[in-house]
Image 1 (cartoon, helix red, strand yellow):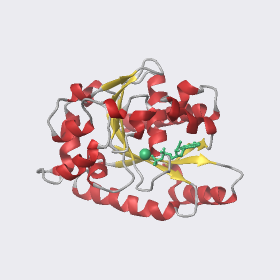
Image 2: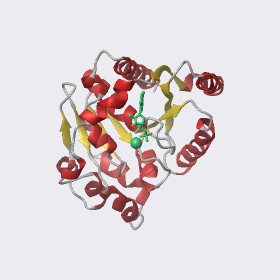
Image 3: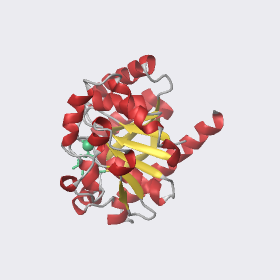
Length: 262
Ligand code: ADP
Ligand code: MG
């Protein structure tokens, strides 16, 4: 059965979508059967995979609200080979956020729908919106683990405590097994003193929960989405591509260790 990893941080612009798309691509490249779920009405992960969010017949919204079968909502991303499945999103998902509020067990909707399909994958990655709303709650209830991207800057740690509180609440009330897959330092610039300080604090406080892999600030990572490609396809030799490959290996190492311990 697949391990479901939600990429969450209610702060916008910390690298959630970039990490979702490039980690998905790196895991696919490493031959893992993978599903990427775009759970943000901005549809950035969808566009970043080269799928036109304006031309979609069915989206994550139709799955969540309209009982459209999972298979009818899927898109196939072909690069890097052998590719991966994408559950795409666009602005329609804003309606789902409201519509979900009317449904019974509204926060378990995604979890229920996923339970029928997870056997087909080894990993499922969910790109969350930049808020702690009903969509993010659905992701946290459906997930086994949370990957938290952090940009090492002044307000980073403040936002982190609100997120950790939410994760704790979800654990207590709805998803006792939920754990932190890891905290990921993104857009890292080692010449920036503040980034170094925040990074040191993170490691001092969260220890092994912080991934060893650091994602550097790299212009190729920022350029790739405008070509509808992951950085692995856009520029496989770039520092960004190599960092996301290293992250995929680290995610898998941690994952395998956990499976063996269980
Ligand atoms: P979020 O999904 O958390 O809102 P994004 O992944 O959309 O954040 O990233 C915010 C912006 O930062 C985007 O323009 C993205 O291209 C850019 N970005 C993300 N990671 C990097 C990186 N490692 N190097 C350079 N730019 C990056
Ligand atoms: Mg995003």
